[in-house]
Amino acid sequence: MPEPSPSLSLILPAYNEEARLARTLDTLLASTWVEKGASEILVVDDGSTDGTATIARAYAERHPSIRLLRHENNRGKGYSVRRGFREARGEVVLFTDVDLSAPIGEAEKLLDELHRGADIAIGSRAVGRARTRVQRPATRALLSYLFRAVCFLILGLPYKDTQCGFKAFQRERTRSLFDRQRLDRYAFDAELLFLASQERLRVVEVGINWEYARHSKIRLLTDGSHMLADLLRVRWWWLSGGYGKGRRQ
Image 1 (cartoon, one colour):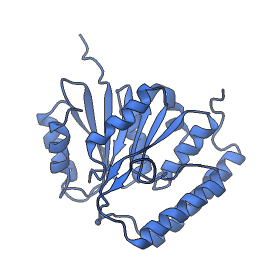
Image 2 (cartoon, one colour; image 1 turned 180 degrees about the horizontal axis):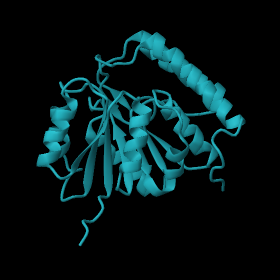
Image 3 (cartoon, one colour; image 1 turned 135 degrees about the vertical axis):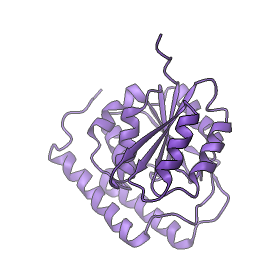
């Protein structure tokens, strides 16, 4: 008899995370989200050059709930999340960062919205009762605000925080988004939300607790310019038919 599918798939995109991965997996395994086969953890090693894959493989050998997906070369977070979604077996798919800036217990807030009928629930550091325990540098906060404004101007996205790495999806209802997604790096979140708006999916933005990671790998100026270029690509692909036909209701 085949094993029952998990109700929740957790995707962990990881690139050179040997210093943090074991602690993160221990935290997840100790949480209520990975009990009695109800959840699976997909570690997507994005071409790491350190011991990330070795650690993930060792955990997968000891814990059936953990699976390792590995890229030979670095492809980007967007590519990693897309692959994880396609490999996921859960009814709900949630991706989070290895640093667990959003404590895994905050997932309950996202899952509650999905249970109420949302197709997508996105964690936000800027709405409701969101609380950031470590203040972001002023430059990063300013660039975040500017990116939000640009997302609205170019893609019409009304959300206050498109880039929070904590999002949950009803897998069957949102499969088409990941089939059409094209961006491989940081602006993939905005691309997914734009495609969701075009498909008239219900997206709910949820305030979550968050701890700013001072060791963030994002390079503000370089990656910021790439993200702007990616937003323009999304708009062009949509206008030129590059996404093909999506679901409309």
